[in-house]
Image 1 (cartoon, rainbow, N blue to C red):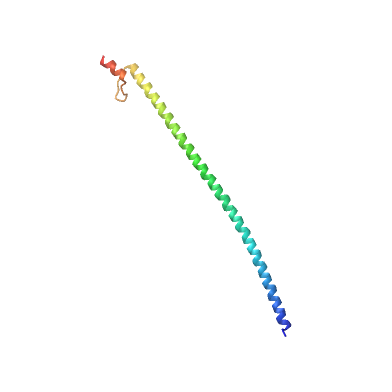
Image 2: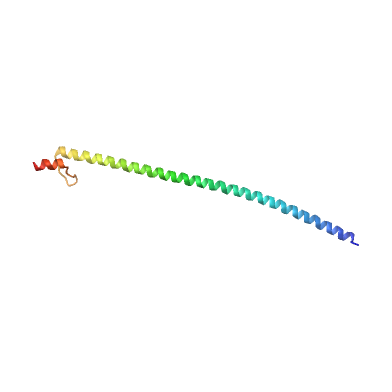
Length: 111
């Protein structure tokens, strides 16, 4: 028959196998939990990146809008300044290559 030593050895091997299987199961569960945690972190990061990108494009659009407004305002002020300079030149009856002559001044000169 089967000796008591063989039965004992089989029993010990079975216990070790059970122990290894249990450790494997625990490691697997731990790994699954870690993977879920990393996956959740990646999703949060992706959401954050999308928010930052959206905020960046909004900021760029706002900066472009402000630049266009500033450019239009500067052009408007330059036009007003140019009109004031021409008006002053007319009043003082000045001629200068830097000041375009207005049709009104040319009529005065022709008379």
